Image 1 (cartoon, rainbow, N blue to C red):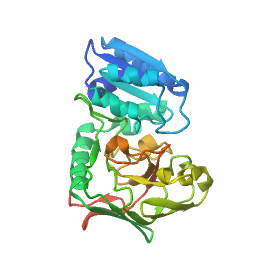
Image 2 (image 1 turned 60 degrees about the vertical axis):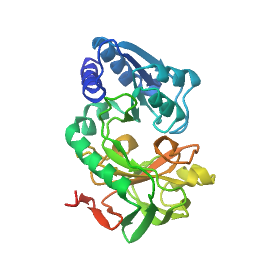
Image 3 (image 1 turned 135 degrees about the vertical axis):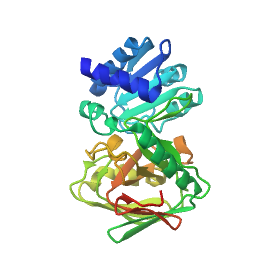
Image 4 (image 1 turned 180 degrees about the horizontal axis):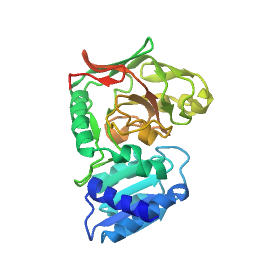
Length: 316
């Protein structure tokens, strides 16, 4: 535990700028409680007013926490949430950030991820690239992803890119840890085409075989491939089926391991997600938020080639 506590102290200082006297709330559940306890002990060591809430594991990422947890989040200076399912795209997270809380969500975090991989990145470098990509997303009207002969076009007009650089030091700043992505909420009816998901997929994990998705008018119409039956919730209704996010990984230390928290940060990957996007500028509130990773994609923003087969171009 002492090694985990030492790492946790570094995370709290370098990523969240935790200071003595600040109220730090750790939100966790039983399966991630060892990491939660390390963060709690680290907060105490730093002289913070440390608190920890252990809640029942949510069934889906994006499901709201209990009201008592949501209220406590709004009252803290810092919330750090090592949980099995994501709190990132919840009203609780939105409201806490609006109240000025600095928030780091860590959905699916493991002990190994906490001490290796994306958490070991040079976050100054990650922040620089993330900010550049975010600005490009904001300027773009359309995105086009190409992969294995499939093409997906996505309308971004009027939407702002969002950085998740792993550094959340100002009031109301929030994002994932480990981090390193720039993302955006597309227009909810503005995506058309087909795409191959071949990295990992929420609900399945790391993929042994690719998934094939067909999307029209912003909605997932079909998904085929090994274990695609695990994604039936996405076809349950129009809100769950809505393509709600386009994201780009910017962390060179991130490793594809089947856990979306780190997978979506892998350098040069693109991910799309379905479900809720109200937490980052969209209009769709669904039962879930489920991401799929595209390895070695080609990505255009408007007509600018940004990524060619998984490598960032010199346009950056």
